[in-house]
Length: 152
Image (cartoon, rainbow, N blue to C red; front, side, top):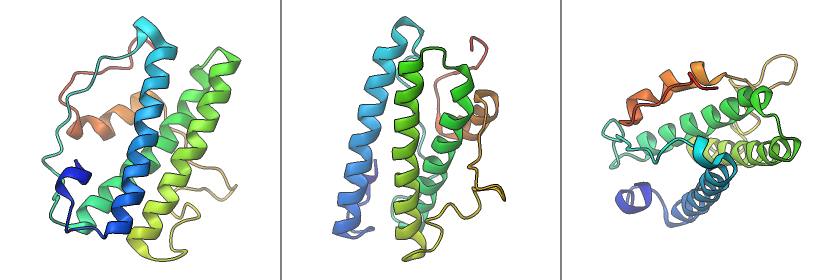
């Protein structure tokens, strides 16, 4: 959506960063669909009407929220993963999500600001970890498809 709607709102170099993030997210989705097989959730119908695509701040603030939520979701889901190969892959994905969060924070707040996880890393140096039942309510405003954590 941002790449289609955000032209003229974010700078050209920022669009390149957002395109790279999109490509990573697509790769993550495809990996998870393959790994989960018939247990994967269906393609999601999204609702991005709350995002003002004519506002750089709205676009980047939403991206910042999603990327940090993604980090917390992967961290929280780690305990649910039984196959060690999948756990290793999830660990690699969460590190990429954290890179996304850092670059979005930099775009939003300027060089160095928030890139070290400000507001998301606790006093022990650990990032937030949220279980699926805590993640789903946070994304519900953006997803039309009904998704539950009941089968986890």
